[in-house]
Image (cartoon, rainbow over all chains, first blue to last red; front, side, top):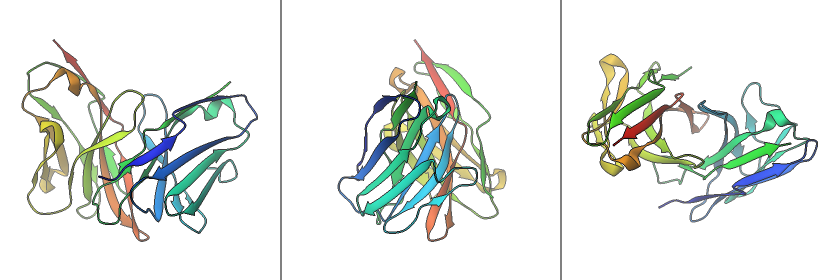
Length: 115
Length: 115
């Protein structure tokens, strides 16, 4: 079945630095990938839709200059949290859908802690 | 816009007992409906989905869900819960938007299984 790999699983960074999270579709091509953020004891909130070869589409309230998304190939999307602050600490999850599939496959998530 | 309501934030059941997790959605037409499970610190795994056809959907791990249009509900059920079912369960609604599905998640129901 479709597999989505997300890396890293855990990351701790200092306030003011930038962190890059990778999302790869291992055995299928994904023209569209999605990035979600999950706060403790809350649901997943869609941050942005990553489109291969074009600009990402951000949800209302999400700062596009802070959360940089690059979808340079059909199997890789990256989310860069720039100038991270403690309030950016969260669980970030990506997802993608294989063309012939009817459901979405999620990555295992990235726990970001900004100190 | 679509929305998803999971009225039970936390449920505790005894091992071997039956389980029903409630989900109600709001959307003008019949959406795509999903149930996902998330273990602590992990990504999401698709349990089952409904697009059309038979309103009783069978999923993995012995779960099933029934779509009831009149009640705008898509409740998840399992006849006999196992300790390994303890996790957080998310109901989700997908609607077509700009050439892809936009998925909205409920807040989640945390399931605790006691011996």
